[in-house]
Length: 200
Image 1 (cartoon, one colour):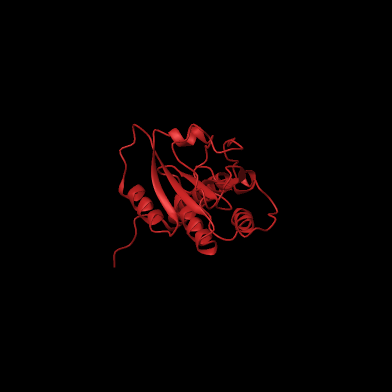
Image 2 (cartoon, rainbow, N blue to C red):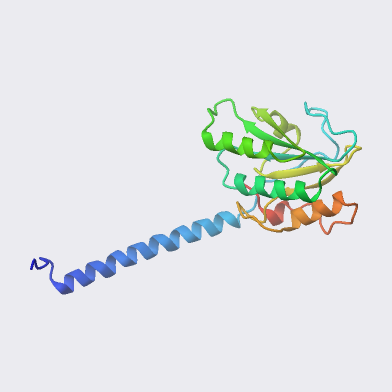
């Protein structure tokens, strides 16, 4: 039988020390994730009317929903999932555009292309590449996953993130508010950006 060269007491000390280090790392990671999920989104000031600087045209028959998506945002997958749920609940009541930010220095990757593919298969959603953030600037949008709803007449009716927190799916005030507006009901809120914290 091969005996360990490390004395039992020292071996126990090393085991306890290693466990303590792992526990500290797990606690630090949990703290960082919680801080990220609860951090406020960057300030966004969308125009109250459809911006003339936009190259997009609002739908003349149905309200227009515009959602902004950035490369490598942790909220992207959840935001697209929430968009799919909303569009399923409001079929034929809204036209949506998923604007994927395409910075001049961004080379793209498979994950980003996959997100575009997912969004393009949602009924009622059109995917558009926002070259160098032109549309994001025109609409005054900063957070990835931010959604803006404009009426047929071009008036801003809602803005906020589609997820409750960074990358978290599930029923939330944004989806409820949008669904209410699109079903001609009175929403409880029309700005959920501070609630949803749908930042990067």
